[in-house]
Length: 346
Image (cartoon, rainbow, N blue to C red):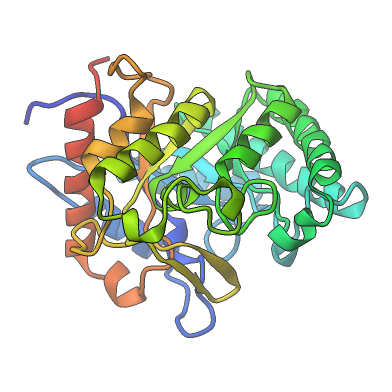
């Protein structure tokens, strides 16, 4: 088969849950695992999965027997576990990082439980890379009422979360989505990470579908680098993405390959954020392989090797798309191409 050995290629399990429950039912974890296990592209297979630690997939309150069963299930398919989403949002038991009271307590409880689950999976031999993913669980308008003060509160919450993660030997990654206050623009994301000031523990999770919208200034027009009508101008898009990636790449410790057509999308209870498109979508504005390299390679063009696996995020795809095996074959093919272009040998 040839090609590079790293980064390993993972598939996200949360597209089976995020945005579901209203017009479409959730897709069971085993179904998502089946599709991942069956995917094939040029003789390549997925190496692992990234998890969503919430019902009906994996409860954040899962007991040790269930963690063992999860490890047996995933490991028995020849897959590894990488990163996982901690359910820090109020609707599923968490709380806002901007609330210094009960919200912070609930946020930190979710982080603690997620770290414990992932540490246990590591001890069971089915996990050797990855982070705990968090957001601020705060709306943009609420944050905008007092940007400096609210960023300081969220940074304090993040520092406390870092203490918890460090105790478990874990790292945290904050994913920049335009729907989360304090993380909704590339400059505000840098400000929050710098204010947290724990670079050995917390970093940034770049998702190509979300981070492309940073260049347009969605929810933060003062930080726009290009206009929507410039998305088809590859030179302009490349220059804007270079500015964003130069600012955030030093913090990037987790990475989602994705495509975006320049629009936003919300589904179910999830606010509008960068639309995830199919890898083969002709309306996609990104050159997936080229633009992945903006994140995965340093200014010298050499791989940063900041993460041992990368993931595909198909968040809020329709169920008919998610349950079509060709979807996952096409996604895997795109990820193999990214690794061939920007990966490395062990």
